[in-house]
Image (tube, rainbow, N blue to C red; front, side, top):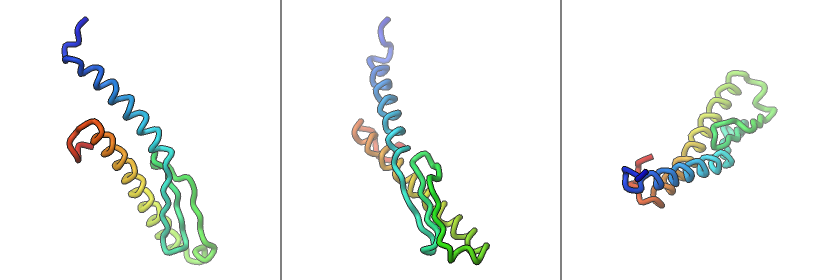
Length: 102
């Protein structure tokens, strides 16, 4: 059967494979964010927390610790998303797609 989209099926299949490879690569990347110098959160490209380090000094103040955990986790999440977006942008550019598409 002829490809009714003039070869687009092959192009889309290749794009899908590249996206899957990119996703697997991005999931392996890790970022780290620190809040107040007392809490450090490490997160991977799949937005999963890999580790949390808490300085014993932060244990004395529960509210401070909660704030630092929240801040470090949010920052790590933002950084992780930036890594993935950068990789998607590189893939889009390599395929000749306009910037900002992903």
